[in-house]
Image (tube, one colour):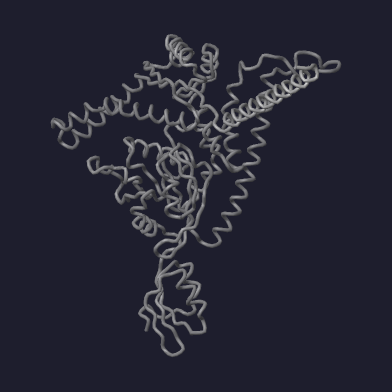
Length: 497
């Protein structure tokens, strides 16, 4: 082999090596890009340790009160010595256990709705809360060990923490600590879609953070720059408080403008009497599914808690041809933070202004009666507990014949929004309960030239008898008073004579 041939072979080998390196580099880049895309598309869920707390001192008080109440009821009914009365008194403790288990399952669902992965659940039972850590030093050390062994990212408490308890726990645990109110606010922030919903969530978060700033910043700032202004100045804590207060005032102003727009829209609606019926109920009771079944609105249906945050209004025609506005609202939950009720006043104004409340209850839930009590508690806070209410027991398709339907209020209606069962009975109950724009009946004598009036009656009312005599049409119509009274000048005697 000559020197020239050797040189050509060497050059060819070098080119192959360079090409191979470029191909490998491109493949590596593609793999890294794909990995980044996968990471962005499917963020890893945060690993959470759940802490459920029960104070047995309070439970004993409640159990004793329940025992006394049940005993008094048994005595007053003349069956104090009957076996069934004794069993009902002794069953108070098991009912409390069922309530605690249901509350724990609900909190686990809250954690999953926030995007967390539950890696461990710890239960702490104490006679009374510990002022420093709520759960006691021994339980804190146990939680620290569980966090280290599971690699958890945060600890979730199914209880509200005071600012000092939150600071003490964060100082002792190697991860973030979040209480029940923070968790609910985080879920609300994930589901807020409209500007109004985002403002309401921000206001609730700011009001929650304000008393919990102490100890977060010890640095001194805002030093003066002239004679008589030098010194420590404003602390970081004071600065943060001032900024949050300013932001709270700004958010409240924006929410007030939202309320003003809502009032203007409501005044325009009230010019034409269209009653508002508001859906209320516990979170995940199936309100949005039933709302879609009635209105074909196509709003988000999800088994996650608080999937509906922003109110929805849709028009619905009742069997009497009356038109109403049906409002889908945010669900309630036990121990709903009071700041949330105040912050979401703009959303809940539809509940306050509604002529009728449609209380949707989950018939398949083991805690259906307690959920009803929690909803009624929030309605009392909104000062709407005196409004007429229709109870709808939803999800009857999930209730087996062996379980039986839960007892509701007289006139409760069994429905299934998913299977579209019982909707006709529900619409009729709404029709009968509304007193605004009542259904009336009138006879009309219309010239055949007034075809537009006849068309309006057929579109907005139920036209019964209709006969023609010469140039006149005799029509009997049953429908909303607001429509029928518009044509009173063509009214004739009730018997059509």
